[in-house]
Structure formats: C-alpha cells, structure tokens
Amino acid sequence: MQKSSKMLRSTMLTMMVAMGVVISPLLRVEGLCPMAHFINVVCAVFLGPWYALASAVMIGVIRMLFMAIPPLALTGAIFGAFLSGVFYKLSKGSLLAAVLGEIVGTGFIGSIVSYPVMTFLWGRHELTWFFYVPSFVLATIIGGSIALVFLKALSKSGVLTKIQYKLGGPVYDLGKHTMGD
Image (cartoon, rainbow, N blue to C red; front, side):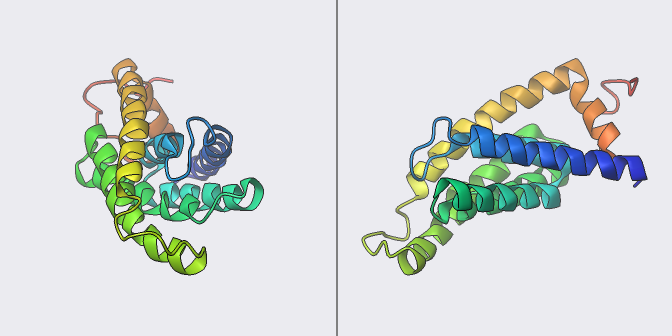
C-alpha cells in the first residue's frame, strides 16, 4: 500500500470515529443504537474488517468514557463491525453481505456476549442470555438498512469505487465504473 493510501486510510478512520461519536446519540436508547451500526457497515465497506473493528473499539471507548454509556458500547459494536468487513470481503463486494455481517455479529454474537458483561461487570443480575437479542437485531436492521441505502447510492454514482480505489483497498465493481478522479 502506498504512503498516500495509508495516510488517507488513517484520515478516513479518524473521520469515521468522529462521526460515530457525534451521530451515535441519534435514535439511541439503551441497547439500541442504530447509527453505530450504520458507521460499522460504512467503515467495513470503505476500509475493511480490521479498520472497522478499530473504529468500533475507539467509538465504544470514547462513548463509555465521555457519555457514560455502559459496556454495551463495545459488546454491541465490535463483533458486527468486524464481521461486516469479513462478509463483504468474502462475498467479493456484496453490500447486503456487509449488512448481514453486522446483523450476525452484533445482533446475535454481540447481544449474547453482552449478558455476562452486563451481569458480572455491571451488576445487572435480572438479565437472561437472550435479553439483548431483540433490541440489538432491531438496531442492526435499522442502521444496516440506512447504510445499505447510502452505500447503494454511492455505488450507483460510481463514488464508492472511487473511494475504495483512493483508499488502496479492494474494489469490487471495477467493470461498472471508471477510476477517474
């Protein structure tokens, strides 16, 4: 990867973290943060699974430290962000696969991992293993749907290809659009 691509990737990661922190309070109630899932999917498609994971961790830590959000800020984001990027990559660029990765990772894995974290670290002993599944799945469907509409619009206009190309990552729809500026 070229030096300019690394700098652009770092800059994009920083922007995604900043946007994630700023927009995460929108539509948020405990256990339901759809805008975080929007950021996860967009970051996964733009930058890949490892950057999406890094973004989710940074956003979660910032939200926990400065917004008094419980550990759900991490358990409800990191698995979906990573799997969104993995599913996108394995599918060779399916935006729907990226959204499904977010739903599986956060809606199911993250929600179930949240039980022991919230029970043993946060003292919420009234919870069950599946307590967070409905709200996490709903949040991922809402945020993932918004991301899907956004990314499809970028793809249709050719902007998604240009962003991915500039960032030095894999570009999956080369035949549809030219690389131009």
